[in-house]
Length: 252
Ligand SMILES: Nc1ncnc2c1ncn2[C@@H]1O[C@H](COP(=O)(O)OP(=O)(O)OP(=O)(O)O)[C@@H](O)[C@H]1O
Ligand SMILES: [Mg+2]
Image (cartoon, rainbow, N blue to C red):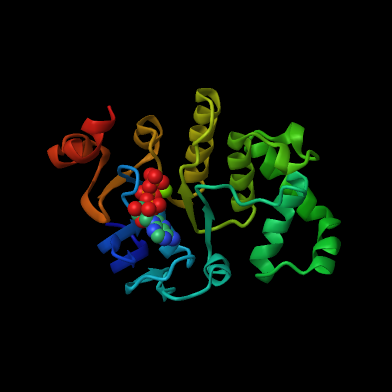
């Protein structure tokens, strides 16, 4: 085992009578891509939201890079080096793509959105160039001055990826990054995520598309009804009868 960069221990979370997460233990290794799969409503997004401070767990802890982040605010976790792409894109629709990426860089530095500071930042040449480079990296260079709200769902995902990349996170959490994309764009995203991996970035990816999962994952954990029912290499997961019964068998 390599260095553990994120450690989730005994996390439980209920919504009223519904147990969304049940005694979750998960270790994410540095530099690896760890996929979390499972049927709709299994608790995947809830787990990710606990990791980024959007949802407070009822019990348990989230430790990142040796620091206990349980109960910390989302911007504190972001500043610690964790970036995320949510299931529903979170962008400023009235700003251009370029402005969204620059604001994201600023949000990590400052933890808030102060308008005057943003205005001066938007004219910063180095940041402008880097934002442009990030948008080129995700294949959106031709659209940098377009209003972000007018993008297709797939392009919004790619914009969000650029917004994450400019933060140079140590850990990138992605909730269905290829949802709403054409097969062509999905393959482009797979290539991009492979390139990010070469730069040493650790990733956790929630994904329904098994082509994406098996193209990228070093390890896979399977969630069903709030519990991790299996964790292993892609080959181990493919051959696991419990997984086939709970998920793969039903979906394919
Ligand atoms: N804020 C909330 N309040 C009440 N129930 C919630 C809340 N968030 C999630 N749930 C419930 O918790 C369960 C797990 O939801 P979650 O969104 O984590 O599943 P998921 O695995 O991400 O599903 P999908 O693949 O459809 O995105 C579901 O039954 C969902 O309805
Ligand atoms: Mg989800």
